[in-house]
Length: 339
Ligand SMILES: CC(C)(COP(=O)(O)OP(=O)(O)OC[C@H]1O[C@@H](n2cnc3c(N)ncnc32)[C@H](O)[C@@H]1OP(=O)(O)O)[C@@H](O)C(=O)NCCC(=O)NCCS
Image 1: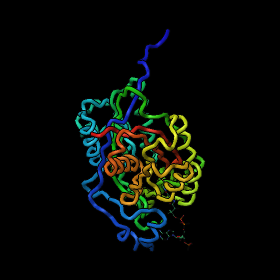
Image 2 (image 1 turned 60 degrees about the vertical axis):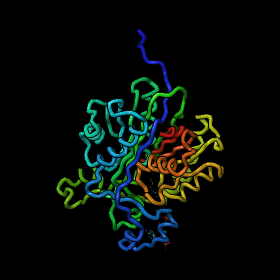
Image 3 (image 1 turned 30 degrees about the vertical axis):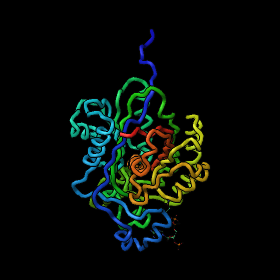
């Protein structure tokens, strides 16, 4: 007996939409509590300011705002969406998922919906799944969202993290295409380094100290070994980028833009140098005014670079996400057409 399946099709990013929280937080608001300076933060990371969400800006409300823009730009409504993939590490509940809360808010509570937890690689993991769902015929139109409210999980007194992480949301609609416009994803993990970025105290800390609880162990905050992450990203992620280009049959000079995860300007610049990305390729540096928004950073950076360089609509871009796990994913995509 054979099973009937839909013929393999093609996929593309139809649109992108974002939400940036209202409150701009310059380095000057961060430095006193961590004995730092604006100069040090800018020199080591490139970050000049970031956005922190207020009480009325939740993971769900920010994701909803980004999705509404993406849907409008794709000239679709939520009724056209059959699958929602939401990536986050800062939604505090396992069930029901943030994705189901979101589809209820958006007005299509019947769509397939689930969350993924792949930290700063989450958006590229979502694009991989969204693209393959469309190609296989399982889905027609997929919303892929990266959203974070990391200010809820960052200790303002922690010198290693307080100046890095921030809040925001980005969404893309992935739909059918006449020809391939999303390349094969190169992804994987280096889980032997999973201690390099963690939420501390962890689930195990709570489990091993049943007598203590949140009151004594404290609310979880991100902690990281900055140099371990820096070395891993610089050394390994350019190889992932080159492999993603190779499987897509695209050379670096055919790219319009390089849109890596926005973790650190020095990491971005070193990766670009390692991959010999020519000056003709525009490199996203949304981190300067947005900080590291984990799963949201790539769609936020994509939207910003398209806004500043509208000639990039329809051009090729290399995306690379990487972060806690350690996990990574990269793919070449055609940037969405002009709305
Ligand atoms: C976090 C990061 C900016 C720290 O920079 P670094 O150069 O590695 O800093 P180090 O920890 O080696 O410290 C270097 C010096 O700066 C000081 N320093 C550390 N944090 C500081 C801060 N927030 N402000 C001012 N000085 C600081 C240290 O005390 C040390 O001083 P010393 O030379 O007098 O001993 C950098 O490691 C980094 O960006 N790593 C990648 C993190 C990342 O991207 N994470 C997310 C991935 S998804």
